[in-house]
Figure (spheres, one colour):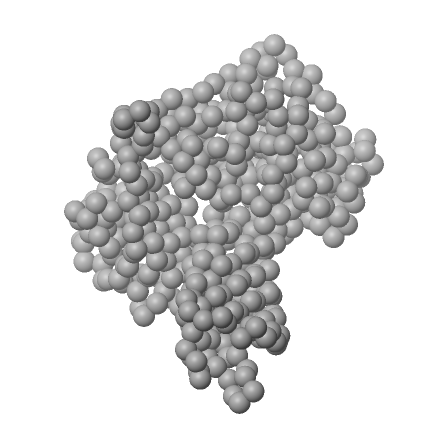
Amino acid sequence: MKRTRTLKELSAVFGAVAITTSLGAWTCYAQPGTSPGRSTIPYVATHSDAAQDMLWMANVDKEDVVYDLGSGDGRIVIAATRDFSARRAVGIEIDPQLILESRRNAEDAGIAERVEFLPGDLFKQDFRQATVVTLFLGHDPNIKLRPKMFSSLKPGTRIVSHQFGMGEWGPDKTLRVRTPVLGMIGIHVGPFTFNPHVPDYVGNERHFDSNDDRIHCWLIPARVSGIWRGKIKIPDGSMDCRIILHQRLSKVTGTFEVNGTTDLTGNVEAELWGDHLRFASTPYAGRSQLRFDGHVHENTMRGTLAVTEQGKTRELQWQAQREPVDLTGAWEWSYATGERMVTLRVERRDDGFIATYLDGRQSIPVTDFYDHGGGLYFTRLIGPDRHGGLRIAKDGGWLLGEGIMEDGQLKGQMEFYPSGRMAFEGTGGMKPPKPIVRDWTARRVESSRGPIIEEIQQ
């Protein structure tokens, strides 16, 4: 199964690990407006021992359906069925020669009837049946895949990536393994390379000064943002409980209110793995506490609620319902620097939502957009992009927005990380421009800007 490489092929692989500078990107990645297929992502086979580690980390068993995106010679697909007894395994590969090689390897391994190799672009193929997805692609392709994985995969689906992370979406588990052979490694060097708050963050990936590989695992989270309402039973009646949850990918924060014989308010500290949600709620004053442990399915939260009052704890089966919302429309707010109004236009399509960022008379698709149930999260690079193209504003940088629907408005937090030049600050060395982080309220408006005269594709 090990592929012998010619000197020319090795030169191509080693050429793929060159460091880029400034706002540049790997030259092997696609330019804006194209999907990075196999022709722009170099083929570097995962070491067989790393493939075993990836499948072990994902806890693959006989109930799983494994999809390997960019499956190469099929070694991960074959190992999933042969060594981990996966019910089914599918490889998606754009190179027809590798498809033929994969099918031959599956025949030789005696598991051809349990595997499938599909030719085509992994960014366009349907892999929603997967319970495990494996990747060895690159930083940019991983980021481009994030929205599709969130919108099409079920909560709890495991994503395992060899070497490359998911930007500001931190992994649930990470494994470091030594490897004696150079694989596909690289650093996207730019203003945000080591900023953990934005998608360009590559701090979790292997660098040239390390001698180990990284394997990361994520669980697709349930959509839990929004306003949840339930009742808490007490000896002489019940109390209304209102929980407000904000979500950024897997990160969940919030507040709660309990109204009854005693009114309580406080913060929510939450943990989310797939559809499994746990949170502790401690009032700002008093000795009461709420602890929930349960699961979220669509608009219902159900599980056990432990209520502690005056040192005594009682548990009860509890559920809450999420208030229905409509995220569609044109949402307007003041830009981070406060000098103009900008708009996020959200439209529903058969397979989910699409979003467009409007600034003046220019329109930019927001491809990194997430519907989190009762709210949304999005990121967008404004200004010079990683491919060297120009966008709409001199005050460019990463714009991140998160909000939930409350009282007919989007309310949450907006963050802006400028991409301006570094500056010396005393003896502290080079420092990035100071970010702007503030509470955010966007109101739905009628589109009155007139026709859009220029649309910039990503």
